[in-house]
Image (tube, rainbow, N blue to C red; front, top):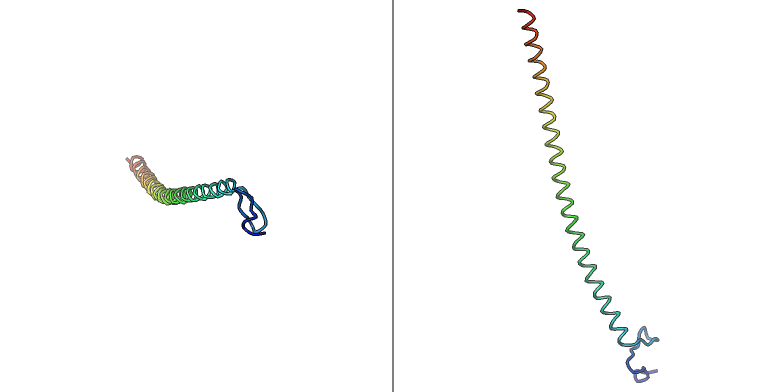
Length: 94
């Protein structure tokens, strides 16, 4: 068969098959739209990944600050307990 034997409104696909030109164009348009959608989805996922990493960095910083604040509070509580013990000790000796 040669190119002139292709039915009207059809194209040769995969060397052996005939596909209606409208279906072929619709399929190509669909593939193009799906490719654009996938690219948008990948872009959105990449942006969300950046946001998640930034939030994790902030969370790690806040955990470090909380640990530092808890250590400072524990120091203050030890100092307060020592001062209270010293005051009570001094009051008992009066």
